[in-house]
Amino acid sequence: MLLKNEPRVFFMPETALRGLISRAIDVGFSVDSRMLVHAVHTVSCMTDETISKKFELFRSFGFSVDECMQMFRRAPRLFAASEGKLKFGMEFFLYDVKLERSVLVSRPTCLTYSMGERVIPRYRVLQVIKCKRLLKKVPSLHNVLHLTEEKFIEKFVSRFTDDAEELLVAYRGS
Image (cartoon, rainbow, N blue to C red):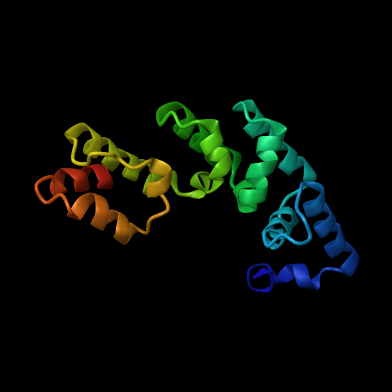
C-alpha cells in the first residue's frame, strides 16, 4: 500500500525511512500494527510542528492527550487533513449534532468525510426523517456516514416513496 500510494518513501535513504518509522512509533504505533504503514505515510508528509499543531487543535476542543493518541492510532490520515477542515468538522459534530467526544474518539474517520458532500446532506436527511417520524428509531449519523451513497439513498430516501422528493431536496441541499 505504501509503495502504491507513496513511492517516494522508497527512494529515501534508509536512515530517513528509519526516522519516519521512529516518528510513527514515538506517537504511539506498534511495529506490529497494520496501521503503522498509514502512520508512516502521514508523518512522511508532515513536520513534527504540524503534527503538534493538529494535536493542539484537538486539545482545544477538550480532547485529552490520550484521546488524541487514540484517534491518531485509529485514523492516522485524519491528521493529514487541514486545520480548517478538522475545526469545521469538530464544531459540526460536537456543537450542531451534539455528538459526545467519546464517539469521535472511537470513530475518528467521521472527520475525514467531506462535510459538504456527505456529512451535512446526510444529517439533513436524518433530520427530516426524525421530524416526520418515518422510522421508529433514527440511526446515528456516524453509522450512516459509513454507507456508500447508493446504500444511503436506498435505505433513507428511495424507500419512503411519499416523502422521497422532500428527502432528496434535503439531500441535495436545494
